Length: 227
Image (cartoon, rainbow, N blue to C red; front, side, top):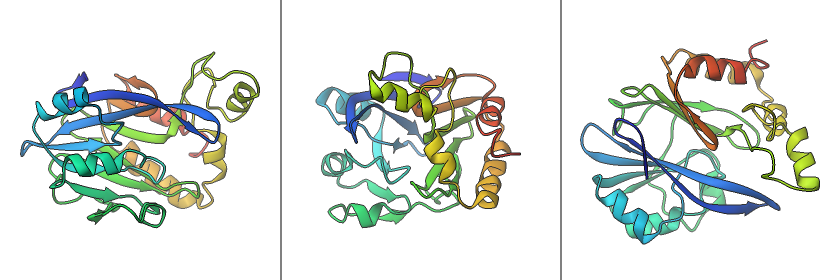
């Protein structure tokens, strides 16, 4: 695992195939003020990763930040049966085999309200729950911002990725997500709440982390929505 900021660690998992496209996976571990661990978007749980996580504290919260990031939840739930599993909108219908404890709301759960803020960003593809770690001034996005470097996709997939802005010169919101913001006023309200955070850093599941000027970065990426 990589130390990203005080009490935040990142771990990259294996590449997964979704609809014929290869996606890297990334999770974040946040140690809360009470010592418990908040696991954001869990990746494949190897023995080595489990040992590294266990060395940081007790896993208490397993977070699926949108309905697409669920592939490895069952393994984590088996490994940490006392941890609570939190569901984003839409995921319980998709994964009826999982035991969800709490739905992720549009405001922070009491368990981490002293450490984190959160906002629902409504989208037809998948409503995403965006988090903000106050102490490190870090925002966590899952799929709404993506950036795949040249050569990641090949052939017709590379063309599709460029047209979708997944493989644009800089991180962008993919076109498919832009089109799925059917309630633009609600999306703008969510974005304004995010931009009110004093963000310095940004972690994304499918792009390199941003380590400075996070609020300016988010504003640039969503400039099309603010018009």
